[in-house]
Image (tube, rainbow, N blue to C red; front, side):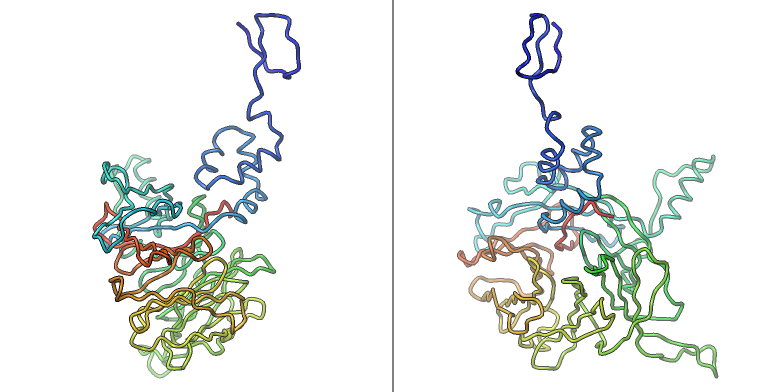
Amino acid sequence: MKRKRGSIATEVDDPEIQPLSPSFVDLPSPITTNILLRLPIKSVLICKCVCKDWHTIISDPHFAKLHFKDAPADVMIRTNDPKRVSRTLHLLEFQPKQFIGRSNYDNGSRFCICDDFCKPNCKHHIKFEAKFKLPLRDAKMVLDKMLEAKNGGRKRSYIACKPRDDKFDVLNSCKGLLCLCGPMDRNPLVVCNPVTGEFIRLPEGSKILRKAIDCGFGYHEKTREYKVIRVFDSYARDPENAKNWLYNGRVAEMHTLGTGSWKNVDIGIVPYRLQFPTSLNGALHWLSPINYGYEELVVRFNFELERFEEFPCTVKSFGMTYRDNINMGELNGCLYLCGIFNFCINLWLMKKYGVKDSWTKIYNIDMACSHWPFGLYRPIKLFNKGSAVLMYHSCNFLIYHERRRHGFNFLKVRGTEFKFEAFAHIPSLIL
């Protein structure tokens, strides 16, 4: 029997020829695009390989911008094995319903986020939706070894990479991209998109000896440019004794992606150390870990004016006793401060950007009544307009907390004996 595609209203006289019913490919392009825009990033990547029409739609830069605009922040997880170069990033896309109805930490239950082969019979398994790779720091060495084997040289079953020399640290996430830095000096080296696998190596800066680099990666909304800022201690040769180095003050440099150089910017009021770079509203923000004032000190780099500024903050200082347990970042488009004070976890949100009086305490969790472990709590995601929060703890686990239950779910990553890091990231097809 022959079959052919035709209109539903078409009459077919030949009983041997029957028309096919309409299929997905018959949909108009705008409708197909609208459907694809609603899919999570992993499904979009799969659909890109289905047919040429879908590949063309998804490859369009306009599609990437529209998909990123409505994409929620997900959790990116990376294991930190000191004996290996940890290049794999796990993107975790989940909903609160995965935790509802489960026992909390008070009952001694631990839930896992693990690969299937680690614990196939696990009843509380949360599956990683996608895996991505970071670029190699010394990619030239790897390519040279591969070329050597191709040209008749000794073939290698694997190419050894020294963790100390080849490992990247994730500096911060911004608009779907990650900035990677050196683990020792914190020098920004690469900007990459873990979803597409594309990356840009940053140019080398001045050859001045430097240490204690403070840096950050941000986006200038008006010019639509990605920028990297770094602040470091500079040294110069002693003119009287070439073997000695003399301290030459603090220096700030800015690099715009797409250019091949670094630009000096006014150092202004920058404190000695800066932590937790956060890109928001066309500026870069840092939290100063050294603060003896009444309120917490937040520093902002204004991309439009190209200068450092003190950012308004009314959050009372957590004190020097708890300095190691304070952090800053972005939640639902707002700047947050989170820390421990008097054995309570305090989470502050700046609900109106730049308005000093808009700092609001949305969580005040008593650690004693629920047996919360001490340490650094880093909020990653808010659910249901702030009724629940997912946090990363510095002792190597995730915590899901619902305000109405006054308890928490304790999630471990099984399948690894080493620490892992977790941070918020919005997956993107841009770059």
